[in-house]
Image (cartoon, rainbow over all chains, first blue to last red; front, side):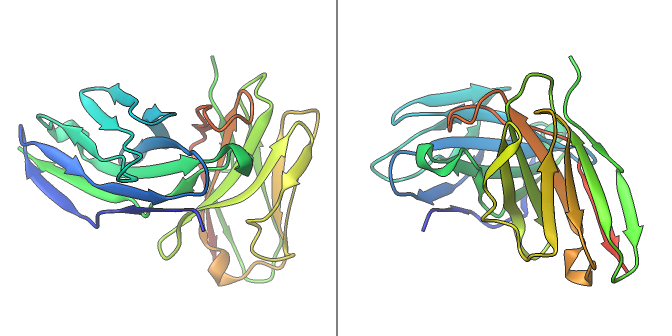
Length: 113
Length: 115
């Protein structure tokens, strides 16, 4: 079936460290890929997305590249801040699937000053 | 403009009671989705509406769960005879269309606690 797998957390980093959160997917067809973020006490919001192979999504210093050959969409940021502390969800949708999001289990990021 | 709103923000109920959760999507958004976020199961899809019809109800966990949407806008998720395993945060999202490339905008959620 269609699924998303993320690296387990929590991930704890010092401010200005480099961040990678791994995400791989299994899908029939050609999915669109998303990263959503949930800051403490807030709702889910879109961080970035990529809708076809080799596309790079970027926002707020975060980047992720849609890699069809490795079925991956890893999230990266060169220098994290304390304000980046949140739960990050990788997700996919399929054209054949009514557009519903299929989420990974989420990765908690804690950035310490 | 206004985002997706949900009410109530918190609901505590006793096992066996019925509850109704409400979602107001962004004006003009034709697609509406309900999801559930729980510790054990993560984020799960429940049901999708296009306009007032629900072509995909595949995520509803049992026949105690139902939902409707009226006027192509407000949606209500009803849980009958609540059980403790129904305790979760219920999230509503809307998008302009149902294209897989569209961004879904989420509401703040309703936290349901079944005692």
